[in-house]
Length: 112
Ligand SMILES: [Zn+2]
Image (cartoon, rainbow, N blue to C red; front, side, top):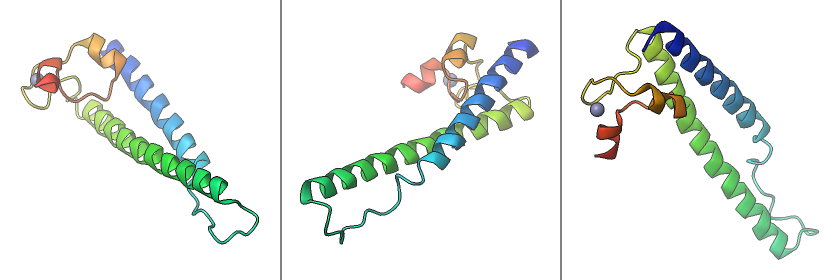
C-alpha cells in the first residue's frame, strides 16, 4: 500500500467519523427518556415510542463501536502501523480496506 492509498483511506475514515459524530448529536433527542406519565399518549403509542427509543439506543451503541474502530484505525495510520493484521501481522488487502478502512484483521483471521 502506498502513501496515496493510505491517504485515500484516511479520508474515508475521517469522513465516516464526521458523519457518525453528526448522527450521534442528532440522535440525542431520540434517545431522551420516554415520558410514561403522559395522559394524552395512548398505550400503543407509548410502546411505539419505547421501541423507537430502544432502536435509537441500539443504533447509538453501534455508532460508538464504529467510532472506536475508526479512532483506532486513525491511530494506526499515525503510527505507521496501518494495513497490517493485528493477529498475524500480514498485510490486509487494499480492496478489503476500501470496503471498510477500519478493519483490523486480514480476511483469514477475521473469518477464523
Ligand atoms: Zn491475519
